[in-house]
Image (cartoon, rainbow, N blue to C red):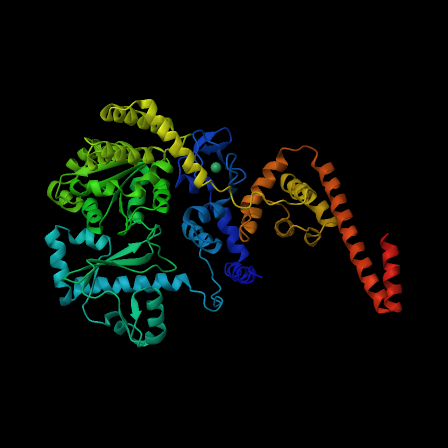
Length: 601
Ligand SMILES: [Zn+2]
């Protein structure tokens, strides 16, 4: 029963973009150029290869085929086409992926604006509401006398009009209902959307008021440049100093990175990115010409942040004020860089200068110099741990040791060579400083590692272990590997004949593609399958099918078996009804069924 509403939603979504549009999006998008925007691809024969973005590996097993327009990892089994890729990378559903690709290809999407199921929140509405609010706030900052204090604050920090406008900064006046009043005609329904977007709060008495009041506003944009949330800095003594939008269907603090849409281009080119803490830090960096900068939104780093960063860079530089570096070192978020094997470095700025001040006072050059002196993450953590504890006492030594080893244990055993070397160097150094044997350190490390792996075993890829009837799997493998056989298969097996629901859906998609265009393009089947989240399965089936020879023979075999299974099921069903009728004494029905049964035998 649980799949009911979900299935309904899928159907609503599928109906929203026409199959013709989906087909033209697919035709207009080249998988090589799309994937290259995320990870570097290297040519390898007629295909392209790369280190797989879906699992950790040292030698590439991720392949992209320009002729088939699909990707496939032979290490972890992930596979799909342009739609699957975007769904996985941007964490969006099929319709959102289609919209993004349409935009990219300059294709206009005619959307059926049928209302979504009751209670569902239309993300589009939230994007539009946020965008509208951003424009309102911009107006108050630049064209309203009430914005004077905010303009003065910016000038005082040394942030110019140009960068403030580029980041769409704004101002929320102090009154309780600025946004609500600007709604004008759209009053009631508009207020509801603003509430869902987190811009308006409703109290227990049912009164609505603006969340952000008397604050300098920093819109938070997603990678596609849509406003998803806001951060507001107070200009008075209000607490908190910074107030963020709450979590909404379009905003999640633990995933989002401030300025990622602006930083993306330079970061992708340099394969390096700076992570700062404040909005103003990022603005000052951009103003100085350092444009591969993002900020976390007042939260510790999460594994989602780290994975998000990995899309844009191979090296991550965390920028800290030296005063607070010690505090940051205990942030468990840092260990995730080790676990995810993303190279991370700490850039330490002089004490008392946050990155914003540093850039305004000194400019980009000294900053890039500080980057050259950046400390490798593991080294940094070791240094901080030995500083935090009193190494002249045995107790202090052992605490420091445990802390460092706990971090060292996060480096995967099969990690990249550089990481292992770095870890070993730090361990050797540590052994010397603490006057213990390196062997003892390694033993302790080993035991930490075994307790860790015992505690959280890595879950296998979802859906991999599903057992499917082999003859049905063969059927799909054959028609996907040898599209010439589709017609023969369609004449003998219908999708309803398959017991496996997923394979049945796939077979329907194959037949449909064939009847519409007279041929079966793998990428189109993947697209059709992706509407059910089965794109990866199609790629796997096609790859497995390609390993076999004599598809005709294999197809005939499996059709025979599918027919036999079906006949058995029909007879069993007839027999059961026959017995029921006999019990009920219904002689007419019994005779009719008996004839039918004999015919089938
Ligand atoms: Zn993989």
